[in-house]
Structures are given as C-alpha cells and as structure tokens.
Image (cartoon, rainbow, N blue to C red):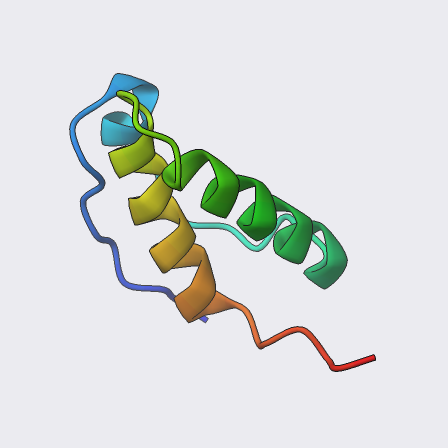
Length: 67
C-alpha cells in the first residue's frame, strides 16, 4: 500500500521526511496521536506542526475502539 506524500509545515527534520512506512502498532499510534493533540493545544512554536501531524495520523489509523 502506498500512502500519498504530503508536505508538513516547514520546521525541523519533518520537512525532509522520506516515504511513509507503517512502523507503529495501532495502540502506539493512538498513544502518539494523544500526545500530538496535547502538544497541538499548547500555544508555542511546535503546536502548528503537532496539529499537522495529528491530522495526518488521524487519516491513517482507524478510530480507537470504545471500551
């Protein structure tokens, strides 16, 4: 499966990202998504990039199952 390449906000190494690879478990992906959402809610220089990555991750993983 080939995922489309998109361009993250220009900040740090993310702008030079290579091909997208499925390296995380679903559980790890949800943990990372929660972390990115917390960072995105802050008012600092990383918030915009965290928000962008959270959106990208949300489009690539299924929703978390309800408990």
